[in-house]
Length: 271
Ligand SMILES: CC(C)(COP(=O)(O)OP(=O)(O)OC[C@H]1O[C@@H](n2cnc3c(N)ncnc32)[C@H](O)[C@@H]1OP(=O)(O)O)[C@@H](O)C(=O)NCCC(=O)NCCS
Image (cartoon, rainbow, N blue to C red; front, side, top):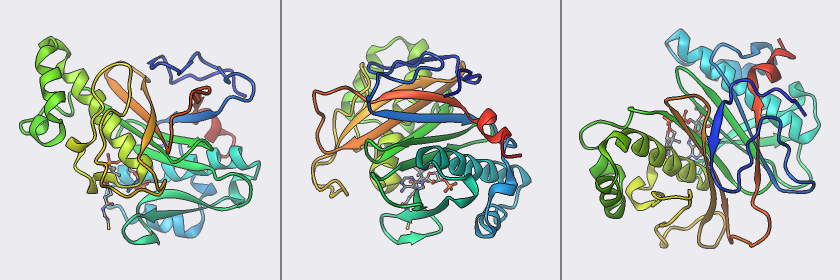
């Protein structure tokens, strides 16, 4: 395991021992989260279809981050399956449309053994990939301040979250909005619903990070009410990251541990 996790500087979240290089207690369930920047990608790793999809973007910076996200997904999936990164096959699966070119990333090959669940989030400044065998995973990142626009609170926050925001010092509002927004998106990516579910119906405010409300009428792949392990991370000042693992029941056993990886270092071996 890499001892160096360069991009990660701070983090929070109960159950998440996120010291650099931490690998979790022996046998503990693990969620890996790899972070890099757009442009670190090893384009040579991508198959022709992945390259073609990445190049559908018009702006070169969007192509660059799509390439990096796809390459990092491959490299992380390769770690989990002990397979050369070039032999990994990835696809996308939408809850509504099924397999195709959009929706959550899924591992198509190699198969066998317990499923490896994957998620990705990318922006102008970061590319993140999460992987685990614990259950469907979601990762999301937002810059603090990105959610500070008119209409956000009404559209995205539940009534009790708006109350909680009003009780918090105003100086903390930008951070709380970004943190709760990433938690909601991480949960909605973990369940695969994305923004087809109103984020205001997913209640995540408060400490410790937890899924406190979910529309029980919604069907999920878990065929049971959704519970989630939820973690906050702060890879650098001004950026909030949340990771969610959807499970049918929250056991009293060990929480999954987070293992933070330097995605730039992982990719450099493939350039
Ligand atoms: C997923 C979503 C919340 C992410 O939005 P975002 O903050 O703009 O983007 P991020 O960079 O954080 O995440 C993008 C990644 O989310 C993943 N993703 C997309 N839809 C997803 C879903 N329903 N569940 C889980 N992950 C999803 C993809 O891997 C995507 O990366 P890719 O484009 O490289 O494949 C939003 O785009 C969404 O809700 N999309 C789906 C809506 C939907 O299902 N509509 C019905 C389509 S028929």
